[in-house]
Image (cartoon, helix red, strand yellow):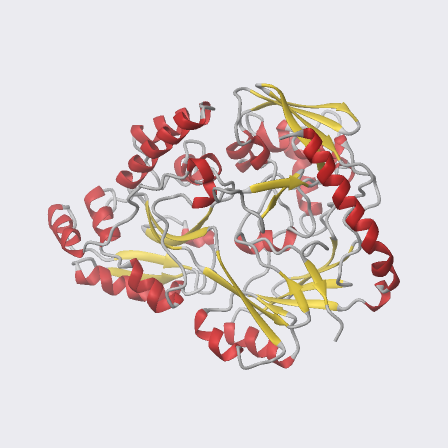
Length: 534
């Protein structure tokens, strides 16, 4: 990135903050409390421990990243645009050293000043990227790092083993939310193993997070609410709400009724069958956004029945995705052509065929496979994904039509989903970084839980070879060719099948000025959230 452009952008942002600060501070005492009705609360507020859909939408307001994705302004080819966050500018100083200049004047929620020490604590090898980091997912994103060094109080150098063309994107995404070093390192003890003291730190801070974001943690009541309060020293300016409370309301009807009654200000996960009825209320606005997230069915390739690749292909070919999209989503979304999105920009493989619907071929493959009509378990968590119960019931009938017998098993958590005996289960895949190394490889690659932990994906040599080549290659044209090969191998392995990308609906009071993103983040920064006078 051009450093001069970064500095200009940051000065412009600072000027905007200075313009709005007087009016915000003058009305600070009159700011409203905002309540958001959610289908499920975050399971923790530790950005290293939990990265699920229900988690990131809450902690996105508590933590910042060094670089931020500008969801409202994609690049000319549809790719993701990056803007300064806690970093003012960044650049490759050599093919393997990436220097980040930090924003000055930022504060942590505990009052300590933000500086290079916070970045070093966040990206320490013991925490994220060493041989056995405390948060194993850290290696998926940052396993290429060989060093993170403080050049001065506001300059940090990231050193990588091989040049990484998407390093800036990595620093804008999952596992990159910056923690404040003083609360975390308060548990560090000389002579005590990192795993031991980090256990203490993670346990203590799981529900007492300390970041630099526009809201700071206030209260957690299990199965009821998470409350955040405004951090008026936020570098973009004082937030629009005095507090934001995420309230657990599992049922869609209850979320809608509460919004209409005035109990809630925003309600999430509003399905298409509610959209028309909400239009009759003059004081409610509905905003919808197709997500950079795909609902998928995962197959356990190591299960005795599903080890037969012909059966897995048959199960995929039997699914009429258009029928699902029309029935559940009113035709308002799509099924990606493979594990990719147009937001990949130059890396997007436009002509990849994706997942076909061909029931006749499905029947043929069932007959050719070793399948003898055994009942196959299809596990899902009822309220976790919108319409996943309805989708399961429709898919069950589609499979029955080609000779596959499936039983729907309702469970309460992903621990139960992945317990022994798992065969097929509902999951979603978020394209966390707009590049294959931050999406398909972050979820399915050689170092992921799917291959090394849960061992649900016995990947082919073709897939893993392409994965390693892709991680090592920096030339854009060569990377795209490798990615095309990797997609072909992945779809041939068939460890999962794509259903569709859901459309998330947010209903809110007309006084709320807020824009949803194509990720599950809920951004309540001053640049994306304001409240009009009644």
